[in-house]
Amino acid sequence: MAKGVTVKLAAAAVLMAAVVLSGCVTTTDSRFSREADRQKALNNYVQLATAYIGQGNLERARNHLERALEIDADSAPALAARGLVLSAEGEEKLAEKSFREALAADDGYTRGRVYYGAFLYSLERFEDARNQFRTASKDTDYKDRGAVFYNLGLTEERLGSLAGAEAAYRRSVELTRGEARTLLSLSRVLVEQQDYSEASRYYSRLQTMIQRNTRLTHSPESLYTGIRIARHFRDRDQEASLALLLKNEYADSVEYQQYKVLIANDR
Image (cartoon, rainbow, N blue to C red; front, side, top):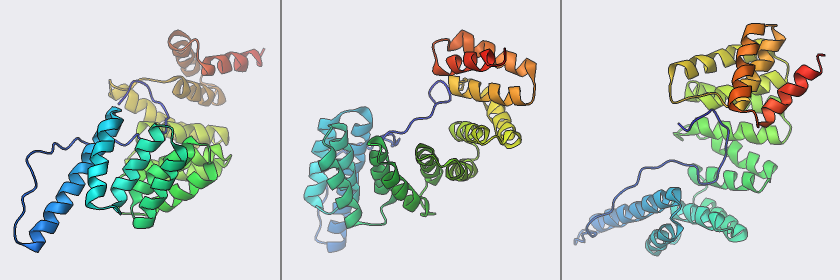
C-alpha cells in the first residue's frame, strides 16, 4: 500500500495482473473448440489491455482492444476498457458512449458499471455516479464489492449526505474486514456527525493497524481526525502526540492549518 492512509478515486484505479499472451490460437474442426479458443483470445486481449492501461501505455492498450473488438464487437469488457482509454485521453463524450455501449451489451457487467461510476465521479456528476455505484453494490458476487461501497461513500459525501456516506463506509469496513482507508473515512464521517464514541472505536482499529504494519503511516487526514477525537475526550497526551506528528511531518498541509485555527479559537 502506498505511504500514508489516503483517499483517492480514479477511473483506472483497478489493479489487475498482466496476462502474457504467447503463441497463436489453435484451430480445430471442433466447433466447440473454435469457440473456446475465440473466447480465450478475447479475454486475453482485454486482460492485456487493462494491464497496459494501469501502466499508462494507452497505445498498446488500444491495439489490444481493437483486436478484442474484431473478435466480438459487443464485448462488454472490451467496450468498458475502451472507455477507460478514451477517458484517459480526454475524450469525455466518446468515453461515455463506450461505457454506455458496454452496459447496453451486458447490463450485469458490474466492473464496467464501476468504471462508469468512477468516470462520472471524475466529472463531478455525483448523482449519476451514485446511481451507478448503488446498482453495482447490489451484485453480491462481485469480488471487489467493498471497494464499490467505499466509492459510494465518497460520492455520498460529495452530495452532502453524511448519513448515506456513513452507511456505505460501514458496509465497506465489513466487507474489507477493516481496510485502512475505509476505517479512516468512517471515523472522519462519524466525527463530522459528532458521534465521537463510534468514531473513537473505529479510529482505534486504524491506529492499531498502522502500529502493526510498517508499510502504513499516518496521513494529515488521519492525524487531524485523531486530534479531533482526542480533543473531544480531553485526552491531552494523545492530542499532543498527534499534533506533534502533524507539525513535524505535514506542516504545509491543510489539516495542520485547520489545527492551528482550532487551537487559536480556544484562546
